[in-house]
Structures are given as structure tokens and as C-alpha cells.
Length: 247
Image 1 (tube, rainbow, N blue to C red):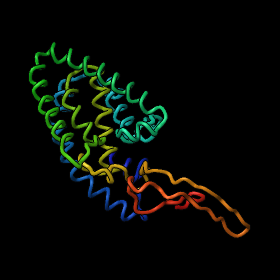
Image 2: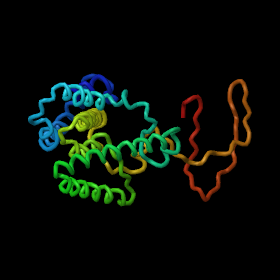
Image 3: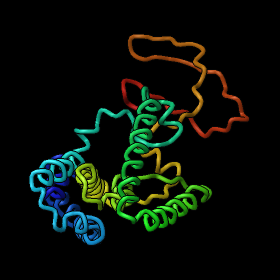
């Protein structure tokens, strides 16, 4: 229900008609259902088995799933769109938000490590996350490609550490499941390795040099302007002009 609610109602992909939107969502649902079955088997089922805390499960897990799946509303106030140096510099408050998120995730991770240690499963999880960390490092050092952590991939990384039967884990797991649903329903299984142009997107800033406008002569029918020749050493293939939000 959450998947189709996100894909058809709360955060649908951009489509021209309802039929094509329905076809797209159904196509994304099948692989998402398979992945969901896997992490249900290894993360959700061990947490929910013999857990009689019905009120906590309803409020924390199910409520967290709704919060995560509606993240275009619940987390829209966070001034971070892409974790790239250029975006973090350009977006006001992005660096502070990133610091707060990192500190929060680190605090949550410490709590989960403590509970895993009490259950005697910490060495196994350290091995699992060591493998995941090594994989991410390999992705980072691949030339000409950029690592991008999508919603669904973040959920897949963190869900194994939430199978503990504690109230915080119920909330964390619900939010992560919701993020997975939102990410796959809205964007699909995008690649975690993208080129710079793919990462920027069709409407992202190029951060190129601005031309030096030397004179502007407005008249009733047109505007004439001229600019200084850019330095040849910077390299350029054209000039883009934006007038009244029209390029």
C-alpha cells in the first residue's frame, strides 16, 4: 500500500498521463518487492518474531514507515539535495545540516553497537559492515564516476543493524523501510555510480565562469549588450543566457 501511495499519490514520478504512470510504478514494484522480501527475511522478521509490543509496533514501526515514505514532506526542510561539494557550498545551511545528520547517525550507531554487544552479535555485524565499507571505498576511488547514496541504498546499508528488539530499533527500521519505498517508487533503482553530468541532472548549475558584461543598451523593442572575451585558457564552447527564466 505504501509503495503505490508514494508512486501514485504523494510523490509520483513525472509522467504525462495516468496510464504511463501506472505502468512505470508496476514495473518498479516487482524488483522492489523482491528486495523487500530479502530484507524482510534477514532484518524485519527476526525483529518482529515473538514481539508482543503491539502498541510500540504500531506507533514506532508503522508510524516510522509512513514518515520515511513521505520524506518529500517530512524531511523536505533539510537543505541538502545531493551530497556533492559544489551543492554543499551552494545551498545555504547545507553544511550545518550535514554536520547535524552525521552526528545524529553516529549517536544512533553507538546505541545500536551497544545493544549488539549485549546480544553477543557485534563481531558478526562488524564483519558485515567492514565488507560494506570496503565496497563503498572501492566505489569512491573508481575514476570518472561519483558515488551517490540514494534513498533505497541507504536503507539497504542500515537495515541489517536494526534487527534488534528495542523501541529505538523499531523506529529506525520503520523509517528506513519508508525511505526504501519512497526511493524505489519515486526514482527507481538508480545506479549508485554516476557520471558528473548524471549527478548534476538536467537543471543543475554548471558552476562555469560568468561573462563580463561591458555595456547594455535597452530600447523599446530590444536590448543590445556586449561582453568581454573570456580567457582562452579556461576553455568554453558557448555562452548560455537566461532572460526572465527562459534560457
